[in-house]
Length: 119
Length: 168
Image 1 (cartoon, rainbow over the protein chains, first blue to last red):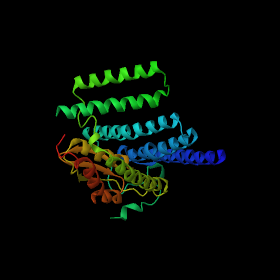
Image 2: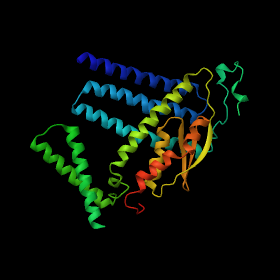
Image 3: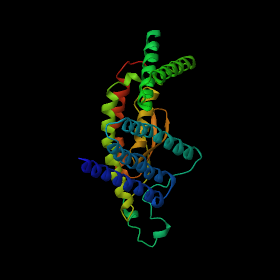
Image 4: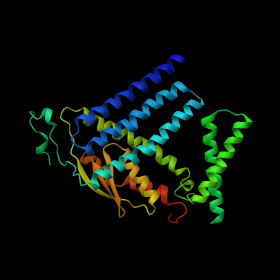
């Protein structure tokens, strides 16, 4: 039983960490501040959610699990609010988002731009 | 109206004390008494500040908000997988665009729930809520089209408007 619990929480923690890494990779690869917010959204929702779920499995039926759950709830209320504040501030300052099929970032511009032919 | 405010104050006190119990986890008379005392003080202060209303304590959302959260959680997971796939793709297949979607909720609370739900699903971020519309930055056309189909808008409206009818 203890082994099963460890396996479940291990799987949740590792996949949560994986999504956090994908979010970080997105921060590096995506072209502008607005697009990068989508990558940050991955870390905020599935990354943090899976890690907290893994910790809850370790906590079992206890007050620790309740507290972890409350952390998740507060995170899901505050993170979109702060993201909105950030996006709205950038928009008000007149920062125009890069639109349309975006070529890869400068490190990889030697690739042929396949995306631009799409409608 | 007075009875409604009393109901709101009592439920705020119960919620506060419930959170106190769960966070402290120590069930001694002294600490429980201190907990009750601090909850009563907080309710009194909130009452004086006149922030105990439908917006500050939206108990009228009831159980429907929970079923909405379950639906939203599924949407968040699906959107996460989609955006993660785009980030990992060597070609980086994104196509950012701006769309204006209609927010058909009459109350500000409903519009906030809708705008925050849009931001919580990766691939779409709310940039501006104004005039019954939300300006959304989407990372690809498919996400914008999903949003324009309006299912999330309808669900948020159903959750936030059906009860009461009065506009907060």
